[in-house]
Length: 240
Image (tube, rainbow, N blue to C red; front, side):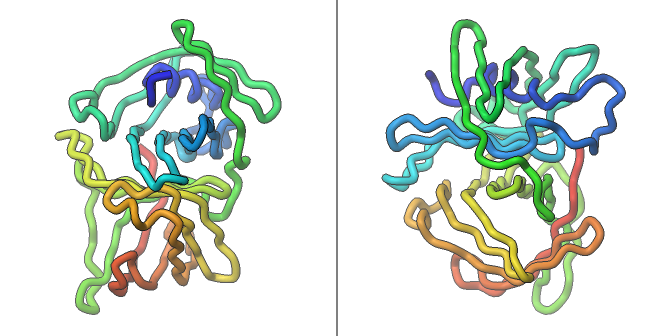
C-alpha cells in the first residue's frame, strides 16, 4: 500500500457513525486510535472532535515518514474530508474528498479501489483530554499572550491513550512540524511518550511531563519543552 492514501482515510472516517442531523459534538463509534503495523513501520490514525490525523513512522528506527489530517463531515450519506495539511504534498491542502467502509469488533476493514486494509483499535477515544485542541494562550515574559484563530495554527488531537500535535497553515499548505505517541494523565500530571517527531528524530523514545488541569473547555499545562525551556500554555477545545 502506498502510504496515506486519502481514499483510505476517507473510508475510515465513514465509520464515524454520523448521520444527517447528528450534533457535531456527539460521540462517534470511530473516535479513538487505530493502527496498522508492517514490520517496524506503523500507521497511526487518530480521530476526535470531527478531526483526523494520520501518520506513518518507524519508531524502532526513529524515522518520521509523513502525516496528513483535516476535518470531516457528512451530508446526505456522504463523507466530505477537507485536507488541512499533508507533509508529503502541500498542494493537496484545501482539496475535498469523499469515499465508503466496514467494521467488526475492534477490527476496521477498508476496501477502496481494490486497496484492502485492516486496522486494529488501540483505544476507545474516551478520556478527560480526548478531543481536538488549539493553543489559544501562551505565557511570554510573565504575560499571557492571546493566540487568535488564523490560517496558521497549532492543533493537538488526543484520543483515550494517544496524542498528536501539528503546526500547519491551512491556506498556504505550509507544514511546520508534528509529533506524537502515547500519553497518560493522572493526578494532575500529563506525560507524553514520543513515538515520532518530524523535527528531530532523536527525540523518539523520550518522555515529557507537564502539570495539567482541565477547566471548562480549557486545558492548562506548564513545565519544560523538549528543549528545556519553561512553558505555560492554555489549549481550548476546537471545532471547525
